[in-house]
Image 1 (cartoon, rainbow, N blue to C red):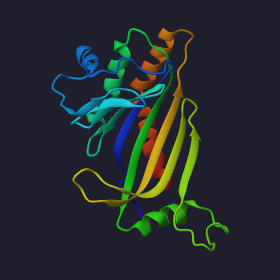
Image 2 (tube, rainbow, N blue to C red; image 1 turned 135 degrees about the vertical axis):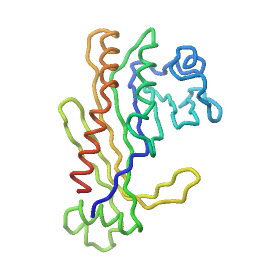
Image 3 (tube, rainbow, N blue to C red; image 1 turned 120 degrees about the vertical axis):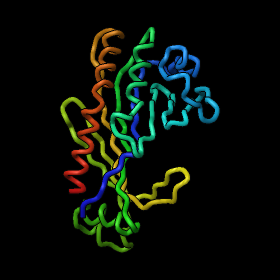
Image 4 (cartoon, rainbow, N blue to C red; image 1 turned 90 degrees about the vertical axis):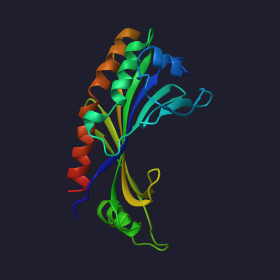
Length: 223
């Protein structure tokens, strides 16, 4: 049965060569024109201790963790042309006066909605898990999480599939099959400038991996 894949979150993650990105303050983002002045901040910005960041009411957020900086956007109901997060990440990269980046990741979270939790588990266990004693055992197998790894040549994809419950703010819970993807890229170059330029090129080409995700999930798992 054909299911409709809905992507609800997209992230750009910059892997850094230094413990904390110092250019995290909201003032830096405003003054460097990385985000528009009229974007409304939601909650209080958190200083980076173990993790810190801030988010806006339009679904875009920023999170610093040890040696990485994540740009995340809630994209439910948006078309690709309406995504902000890659553009913001590119502006951030171009605004830095020094850069040490070791990698770029794209993280995509999508799901298909089902009526009952048993239907979600059936898709994972029934279609994806090979027959064997682990499947028809005592105690009864009630759920499973599958992970697939793919090599696209220029990126490595880790795709996790599981049945779960999903909920948007102000909406009821949904039974879903989740498809969580991480595309990993290494940056190239001998100097910090060359590596920053490599990171910029990778982020600018985010649509390539996004299309790979849609094509793979729809053709191999939902077709």
